[in-house]
Length: 264
Image (cartoon, rainbow, N blue to C red):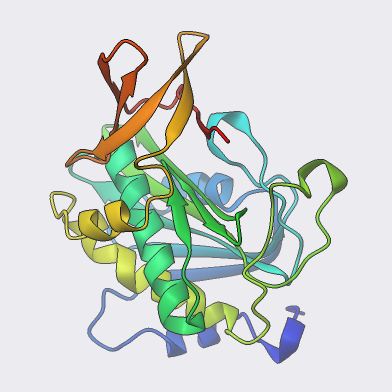
């Protein structure tokens, strides 16, 4: 029996009802609980073989939600939306940074349209509302038997939640008890799919720059195990962050080993 928190059905039928005719409708899989929707998407990519239809894997809750750089993502049932979009067969894997940036904009636009609330984007993959993190995104590619698959995992803290003490200072929610979870997932899918199918598209870039909470700020970043400080001054065409250090030298931040922290 699927959970129906907030009188808010999160079922395959509900999700498909929010997707418009003529879209590339995905195969939809909904689970009460998964360890991680990205992990389930990887297993599904093997199962579907050469099938090229997009897949949408949704869970009411996750027991081992995953974020970038091995971090976890708190995923209690009913209070958030947790899903992965799988393209089981792509001709080539797009750059992970640009996919992540495009996904951030897709979530921002969907939240703004459905809730009327504006989030800010912290490079590269986090969305913030009221100065707290409300969304994390994890993009992964996999190759098997010469076939490449792309997975975009998204977790959004939609409803108020009692966060564990260790993350209470940084994690928050959209404080939204009205927006249907199925509608939000469908809206993000609709916003993001065109880019996933045409990864040279950069129509997301203006919104990504406009909604950045990093540009013009002093930041710290880690490279090769050493913290450096400087100012974030631009985001390039591929979503990489350009920063200048204390000596005036420029750096292009784009790899998964880099963590950006805003300074006070």
